[in-house]
Amino acid sequence: MAGNTGRRGAVRRDGSKKGATTGSGGRGKRALSGRGPTPKAGERTGHPAARRAAAPGRGTTDPGRKPAAAKGTGRTGAARGGRGSGGPEYVAGRNPVVEALRAGVPVKAVYVSARADADTRIKEALRAAADRNLPLLEVSRTDLDRMTNGAVHQGIAAQVPAYEYAHHGDLLAAAAAAGQAALIVALDGVTDPRNLGAVVRSVAAFGGHGVIVPERRSAGMTASAWKTSAGTAARVPVARATNLTRALSELKRAGCLVAGLDAGGDLELTALGTATEPLVLVVGSEGRGLSRLVREACDVVVSIPMAGGAESLNAGVAAGVALYEVARRRSAG
Image (cartoon, rainbow, N blue to C red; front, side, top):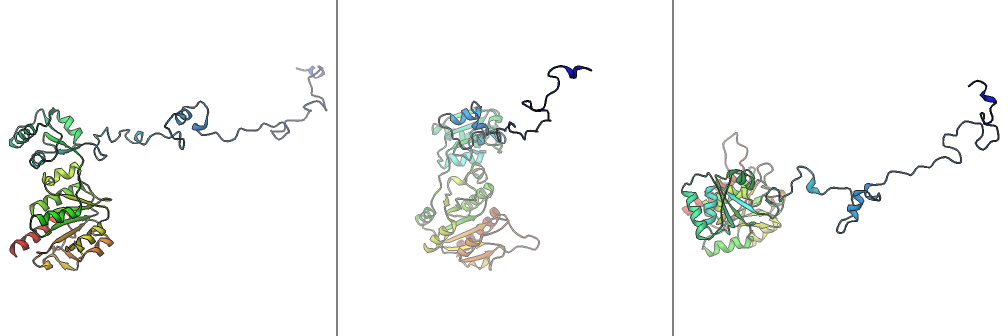
């Protein structure tokens, strides 16, 4: 108000405690000092992340991080039925279940849809399960879809333990016990379990003695491979090699001829002669074929003659064609 300038204390005098000048903008002696960067959640006293980190059995390296299972869909392996993580596997389909029961696979339980058509295969599966005192459980098709991860189960599935792989030496022993020259298929970089199942089925059809797959970057004997093999995986052993190149070298020292299949092979498949000696056929993936080290480990690389326009065959088809040719030559010789 006008006239208030004469009031005591209305105007700051020179030499007073704060002075008559304008503010220093924080640059003066009594400027405020910040607290620094905001600490992490796990370092704040009382924060939930800090309490979780301090709880017994919890690490403190990344307190605010959620468990891996909480990412993505939020479902763990157990929620999906435990498949592929040491949990139960399911052989789905009428022929695969019947073949598994015939071969004495250690089936734990048989699940049948409430509305499945009781044809001869389902009746045989139920009789075999009853003879072995296996649990017979009636479930809905929705439950079967969930357990088999959407596979074509045809109204029946069997729960089996995790597959027990053989050693490649066991395949040679099986051939010797049968009094036959070994016939083995090794897969290099084949990651589709359906291709593996198809190869197992061809090995069974043409008198082979087993299949070898690498331990890494390769398909394994999952329920999908069981399904594609139409149950023949129950009687055709599959070996898993830690190092495929080393396994092939051991088979060569045991007297086997190792022949790789590749579209750019040095010889055609017909150049194998009578193929009466112990033989290992190595099949690569459709995309990149044989890897360099595996190709170098082969005694010979052969190709399947094809008409123009077809560049390559998938692993299942290539193995089937080669096995047929070898079986034909052996029977003719």
